[in-house]
Image 1 (cartoon, one colour):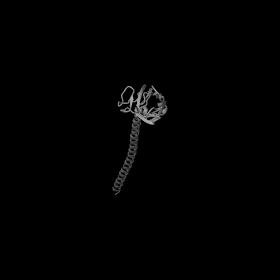
Image 2 (tube, helix red, strand yellow):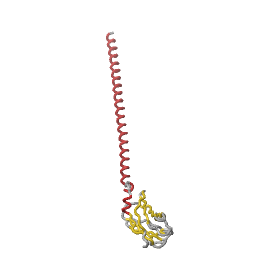
Image 3 (cartoon, one colour):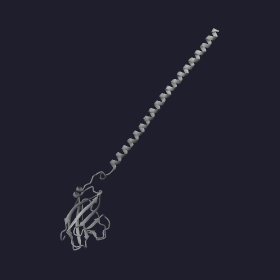
Image 4 (tube, helix red, strand yellow):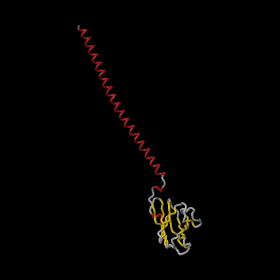
Length: 193
């Protein structure tokens, strides 16, 4: 019996060792799985941070490129002193009883000229020149009803106004461009040209 008893004890001990070994391997597997899960989490966080960083860098580069390609006019703060330096009323005179000639000069500038307004003081009449057809205004060399061109950089233009309001004494000139309107000068109208 002792031999059978010894064999049974040996079998029990082997079974216990196998069980312990299985439990150890299960615990080791759990630890490995836990380590794998932790490492997967770190990898996932790393990938997400890399994607966010890449997107942020892409947006930043896009914004920088857009800012470089935008014209300087869009970022420049305009004030009337630049308009006054660029535009001047060279001459104003009566051509005859109904016509007044006003000569304007423009120097080199970055102004996006949209419109010129002239106000004749005695009558308070306001005239706008915006490059469209003009009925009662003409360039000195043109006829009434043609296009009243806006003055270009480094040029002078003489505009003739058909005023049936009698003799005028002063003309005030305003220029519109780059989103602002500025008074650029006022001149007394000479009795004759």
